[in-house]
Length: 203
Image (cartoon, rainbow, N blue to C red; front, side, top):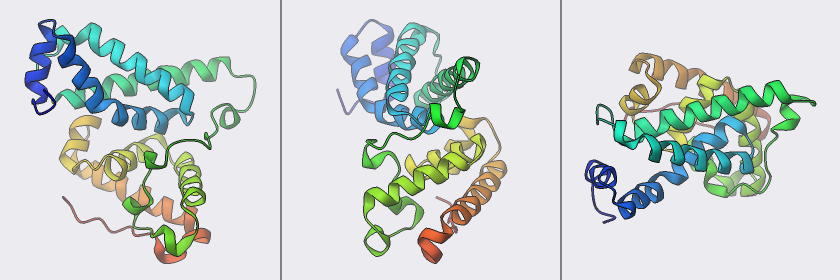
């Protein structure tokens, strides 16, 4: 069943096949985690949001008509869950927001891959420290810039896929990526020097 297309799995799940739905969850849970973690910057909160996302996916699966890809639909649910979480956190916070959702040092290494940004960890410093600096730099980006960086560099999506998911034009995707990479370069300049690549040939 793991080789089944998303469309076939969705149809099976809509007809009550729980194994088909589980395959969909396993197929996309890591990507959903990366989405949520990129938004809330906390591993435990991101895990909770992954669970919340797939509960909503399950409850609303009958409404999915296939007008977009299944992943695009799931992404939007995850993004909305993250936005709701951030709004609640802002209402309830009693400490500085950045401290309340600071980066979890134990996040798995593949949350953001240094190689995706053109950095050779062996030539810079230890991988964990490098990841930490990249995560900190991501936290300094605007929501829009962080979103396109994660979709492109972490999840490896094409410009068209990002445009469809974020509901923006390809031109806007390219513009946001350009500025996001420039900002990342500036934030990491004292750490990686010229090792950070900002050029991006379209896929």
